[in-house]
Image (cartoon, rainbow, N blue to C red; front, side):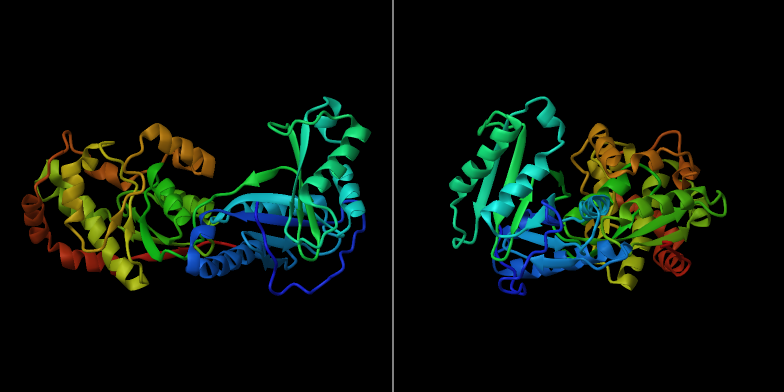
Length: 415
């Protein structure tokens, strides 16, 4: 846990401590952002902006300050513990952070630190069962009168004397952390794991081909974690299916929006195009021909919204359309790169991830998927590109993709 000083923090700013615990705040630990060298400041600024955007839903404006390897979020005076917990849980959805600690900002004296540490552990269930504990201090401001090990012994001795908890420096069940900064001291215990990865927006923009299934929402999440801002494109079977799949795609986008904010869903009425493909007579190639047309349409939309890549939920060998030869045939349809973050994952792993990010339950809801309109008895697993191009020439696929892109509708997320 490393941290430094805030360039904008006032020297010697007093800390108001209305209670022994002081003022509630958050300490946000950065992951691989700290490895970015000369570009690190750009990543940190983007991450701060994403944090502020995520916290707009609250009726106050938190004070977000950059430190070395950590971001401190100071909450308004009088903020309740419950509100601080809600803020912490909201920030935990922001990619780029690995740990979110609900901390207390206390005055910069050994007495205030000790008092806050005692109040912090009071009432915890570890007290009742006499759990082992340890104190871990980090003194970034060397002007503080006690060294880190001296502060550990002072605070640890008081906790041991008052609560009788045994010390275990190797594998404690309860750890009290103390971070001595330039203007204040932070005291905290456990934290909430973050999403890790990179701040959304640092890796460009991409367009997700969003079905109502389990895979594509997980693929979208994984690329958000790698710093991409994503938009969503859903192909509906309308007019030959109902709007159920659109509602489902909308619900999935809403669930994913907490990781990036300002998400956009575009819907293509694809039923008539599917009917034309089915009428071409190439039954076994219909699924791959449909996938190629979807990709061509997505590429046209991507150019219009300035997205630099397409994202799909393909997993190698999971279904017939995702064999290596069929994936190669699909790549041939467009010039934009197609990102497949799930390519080496199996279904069990994908479902576990979907469950963790909250999309699995939505994906398992029944709907009329447009792909069911073209379900041949036997699908081609080794599609030849030239055979697919012949189908596309008969359909005039390039012009058809433009027409489909012209027909898209945007579904805005309700605040």
